[in-house]
Image (cartoon, rainbow, N blue to C red):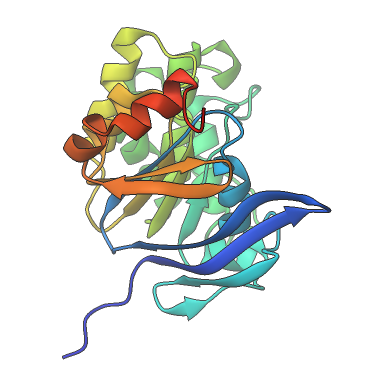
Length: 250
């Protein structure tokens, strides 16, 4: 019996902007169900790499495979149909809608009835929205407008929207940015509670959040992979501390 293909496989993937090499040719393999963090100082190429994986930018070289399927040239919406979801550094929610309505739209937008916006109190998507609200700790705020949520609550809502429709691969871009200490602890709990049927890749500057939430860590610097390892190995790696203290390459 052949082993299952990786959830995400990058083979010599790179991205250039003219003469600027934002991401050098790199190979990265993330197993199905794995939690992986991408760490690195500002300008390391992490978000550019995410944009390439998500289909927002085409790679300059290389191949991207999701669960064994070549998605290198597929548009973002096709990758979403294959089970990919992605969040951004700034929370993107519908400020004028309630929490429940935001989650409802996230569910309805993925189904066969996505072009029918008629709401029904007992439709499957509304029940799914209620389950998502409970999963991310917003069940008591379902009828609050998203624009009235705190920054941390908006992050919880965004995570709920991103996990609508039983995704297979979730890309989180700095989910802990701007969160208080209590909110960061809440985020760690939410990430740990995600089902193992979901593969998670996250960019994070907060090493405490990253190292407590993942199985493996990839560290980038100047567009290249510097090292990979378990959270314990990365926490003890002098090169990683040098990168975050600005000493790498001096």
